[in-house]
Length: 186
Image (spheres, one colour):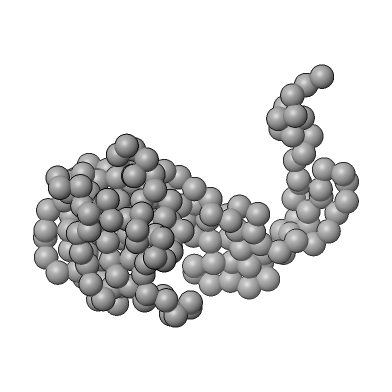
């Protein structure tokens, strides 16, 4: 008898027979899909196609991470976040992460290495989240993105678990990136 995983890989695939946009703008598209489940049942399914996002965990020699204190108006919450943003057309995820760090914080990163990749809600949206690690950065001037954060600070990486527990860090891409950085630091 084949392993359960092998059965799922071959027989549990959902199929999309058609797709159209119900509503959209330059950042996202709400889609209507004609979906067939593995048992043959077909139905309308709604999903969101989002532009992909890149972020960076920037660490200095003292094991501090560069974070931004920002307000998210949709949830009316303040929290610490990594520099992040949308990947522009023709840009790699690493290029986007480096650009966002500089625009949002005024720090220019050195070499970036891939830290973690995630798809935060693959059952309802298709956004890819790419998080990179930088271990060198130089100050190049004030941030050019003036509406991104209230303050920018270098915070000890060892403080991050407590910040997560206090819900000072709630952004999904920030959580995934920082937790991966903490795992690798062990």
